[in-house]
Length: 237
Image (cartoon, rainbow, N blue to C red; front, side, top):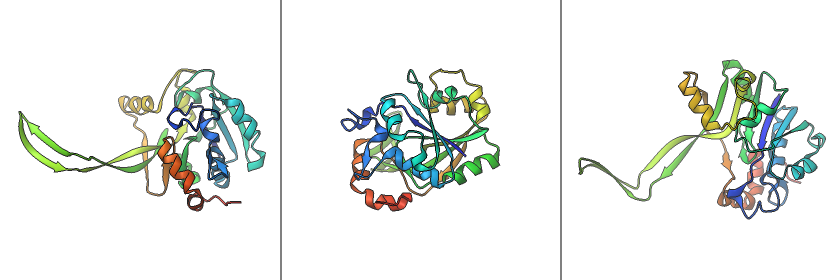
């Protein structure tokens, strides 16, 4: 049961909160850091080995989490010397198991991580992606026209999209085909899979999910953490 947490970003969208500390260490409700919550969830889900892929202010993250003994897991680190996007950092990790979980370090969710990995293995997929339905409301009247003539009109419509939750399961074989140390993102992974007729397996999820990379979402999570903790399976002190 191995998980890789991507925690190397600069957190530019979350400034000024991330001016002096890395985004994964930003606290919620004055109790736990974002990354600490994820590690506690993974530990309680049966994951025993977690690797943090770090870059920006990595020394602070490493000093805070140490070897992971406090959370009952083996914790180690993969340090990027340059930014490699979301999938590229995996090529630097030499001891990847046959299948493993990968997730961003700024996600709050009650996704059953253990079951997600089990389903990935059972299906024999190289890439599995957790997906969440998001509704996007357009605050304008939408015009559709052909050759300058209106053919339909919809007032302030809402569109529905299945978006990546920033949580994946991958196979080692897929990573081994990539060039080591090369910048390679999730978008590249999806598009290359389509181009080679080996698309990712999509696993829809309808539980709780919040990407707190934006100030508004972080502020909501911070102010409502006592309520969110229950949904996330976190016991408050």
